[in-house]
Image: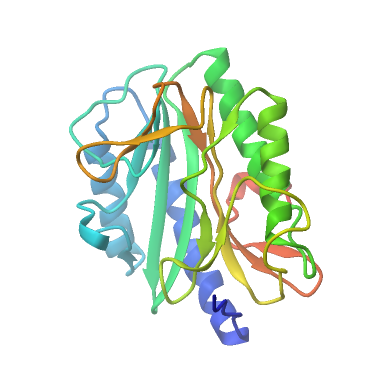
Length: 257
């Protein structure tokens, strides 16, 4: 397993593209409304990335994926394909954005609520975000990748939620998916030792019910096997000399890190 560390010039390019990815999530926020289709959200994001950011939406045609963003609603865990389905009041939706600029990839996702949703959905979304933040806060040189997953799993299960096993975070840079794999469950003190210059995503998928998943017939859409709700948040993280930098931090997170 070869894990690349980025030099100063590469880190600057990653800062730039990750800021673009975060900007897309901020731009699309007011469009998350009942009766809007996920296809329309995809169109808006695609045009913004291509025309305004002069960048490329990474998911489009990636291994045959047909759209520019992923839209995962309610019991969809990840990789939902934008379509003619209209958002409904009470839906929860994850929008996953990956942008390419100057040959580098920036990857981030966020949960949105359409109108007003159930207390369970609100709690799931909150706990999933807390899981992400707790995982991020374990990142520092000398720590282990397993520390990230352990922190996430402990918090999720303390709230009677479960952590999806089949999908994980990943290294990122000149490729969409690089080593290492960043599991969202596990034990402290296990896995690869974290080093300065590493850049990877942390993107826990937290289910209201069982962690078991099912892949739909389109070959992309992953749902909870029990059809209970799922929530996910994602950031791209740089390991610094004495901690971490959240490269995809949004304006609403200024005081979080």
